Length: 126
Image (cartoon, rainbow, N blue to C red; front, side, top):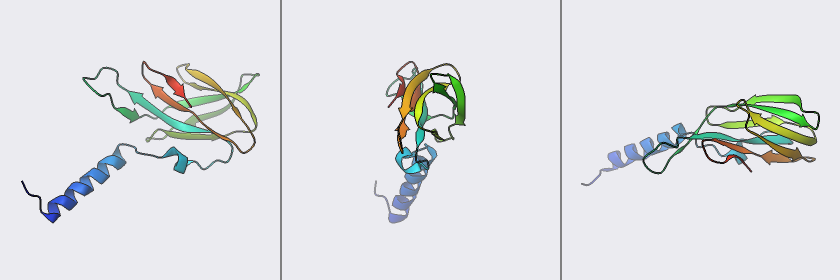
């Protein structure tokens, strides 16, 4: 079957819109902070027939200072799964609202990337 130029352009438009709708965000380009933590939150359905797809997922994350374990920030990732929180120099723990946590440190003018995948798998990753 031959596709005319109008059909070809329509196909390209659909592909472009689908990639935008899937939440294809480059977190490296989305960062606006100069010091703190940022990343992506996603969900993987582990009950799939083949090639489980990672989907962006909005989640609320809590940041605590260490060693005091005091709340310093609460941030909710957007519909594309992107989040960021400006933080001062120091040691921190970031947690999901369901208790999955990881520790990290922020240096001078450092932005730390931490991604969270909600599934039976890895959880937090750098």
